[in-house]
Amino acid sequence: MTGTVDDVREPAAVALVLVSHSRELAAGAAELAGQMAPGVLIVAAGGMADGGLGTDYEHIEQAIERAASDGRSVVVLTDLGSAVLTTEAVLEAVAPELAQRVRLADAPFVEGGVAAAVTAHGGAGLDEVAASAEHAAASFGPGASAAVGAPEVAPGEATDDGVVRASRTLLNPLGLHARPAAVVARMLAGYDATVAVNGVNAASVLELMKLGATQGAQLQIEASGTQAREAVAALTDAIDAGFGEI
Amino acid sequence: MTLDVAWAVDWVRASAATVVEHRDELVELDRQIGDGDHGENLKRGFTAVLAKLDALEAPPATIGDVLKLVATTLMSTVGGAAGPLYGTAYLRAAKACGSSSVDSAGVVALLEAGLEGIVARGKATTGEKTMVDAWSPAAEAAAKASADGAQPAQVLEAAAVAAAAGAEATVPLVATKGRASYLGERSAGHLDPGARSSQLILEAAVAAADRAA
Ligand SMILES: [Mg+2]
Image (cartoon, rainbow over all chains, first blue to last red; front, side, top):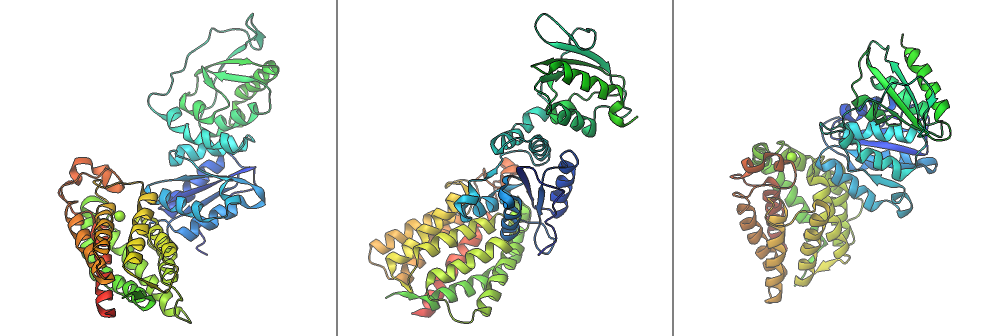
């Protein structure tokens, strides 16, 4: 074996395979995505057996089989042309039982990988993980929605419309970067509540990161759902604690 | 007359030889509109194919067996888009040639299956400055020659001549598929390396058929 198939920690129901022409690019993207989703098996399939640039059929096939072992489903992300073509060739040749558990996402490699990893970590199924990867381009693009502030209300207070609102100041010196964004998204996955921070979906790491909130930024929180109050309380506590970074 | 397994093996060996011989030319063509790896990738792929052929304990039983060995080896060793494209072409061709010999109609079936594989994998059509621009006229010319009663070697020759013309005709085209498409209009004025290597491989098939006669 080539030694470039590197898995990261213990598995969720959906695993990822990252196929790149470059061993380093695949490994780096796997590391980046894995940082935000420690429970997701992420298999890097980058480069040729000799370490050169290119895509290797057997290498990709092995990565997919490994990711799909123990009954997991698999979302595959690819970089340029031949990564797509070779993956398609593999999926055409493997057993139908395996092929039907694998989705090749038409998604940006890095952003899609991060989105898919976080979504898989939240316990989502195959279609949802693939969709999150494919929507990653839109949520990262320059045209992505601007943050909309809500009127400031006392923390945790439900208004007439049933929405629980709170406002907090971000204390983290580095702002709402990948790690705290992932903490928020993971934490909120445990509540039956739909939570928005500055108008974006707080369950989406990408949306949160896209806010570009820096230290001192005001975070307007709005939540609805049966556990809205609990979700807002947990979130405001975490913000006040600087997500454990201060 | 028919072409047999020995022809298929000779074709593969001749393909390897011509790809190695034209490595620098293919690299240069790909450097102009791509990432400059096509010649080296095909050289590596076909060199691996030769090693696999040499390691066989018994000669393959069918033409399909030969082509399948080429397919699986290229897919794992070429590295660029040519790997899955040629790999799928040889794989489909292998499925079309499950016997130990092919007549003129069999040659046409082989070429048409190869074209079908490239189109299925690359989702390209003619006029997009790709391998399809060599393979499509080649398959058409082969079908016509076979219908006119030509022998297998002449069918292959018609295919190779059409592939050469098709490759040459890619020069003014603007690429809309593959790495070259990133260049847009600047891709015009260059011969497509995949069309060129397709031509070389089909010419190798002719040379092998001439030797078999
Ligand atoms: Mg190239």
